Amino acid sequence: MKDDTRISLRSETWQKEDTYYITQRLMERGFRYADQLMELRVFDLLNIYRINAEVAQEIILMLYRIFNHNPAVDESMELKLMGQTFPFTAWRKEHREMSKVSVGDLVSAGDINRKAILRLYSSLLKAFYRSGEYDSREYRYYSYSDAAKNGESGN
Image 1 (tube, helix red, strand yellow):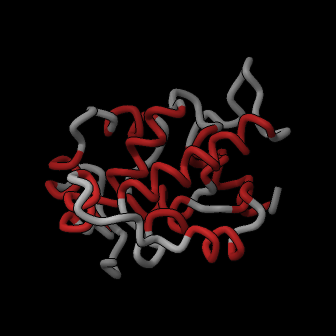
Image 2 (cartoon, one colour; image 1 turned 180 degrees about the vertical axis):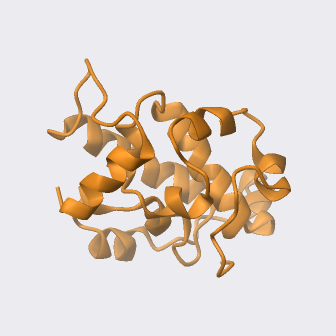
């Protein structure tokens, strides 16, 4: 994984990966850099206004493609030339409390690949919908600064 996650959402690197045109939505919510996304808990990302489960998944996949992409493994797995190599059990032991998993924990895990991210994200999404943090009627946060304040207060 690249050491520098301070990539602007306006940079060419980011824009090249934004095939779903979500940058504007992120900018409206106060995000300016990729590291702001990496430090958020997945549950907080899902609780930001105008970021639904599908958009959150695409954000996570974009971050993976930019910072920790392994195209050879992803392609081999798509073509069924190799099986899953990611150690799910070890990762889940390390991240027992799903509500505390950050986007960076997911994206920067060693040996992670696209299929593993999608599988783990699916588990995180189920845990989020079953948690007390999910409210089908309203989002908890309007912007990045609201979510960041929550992270600082430890809630």
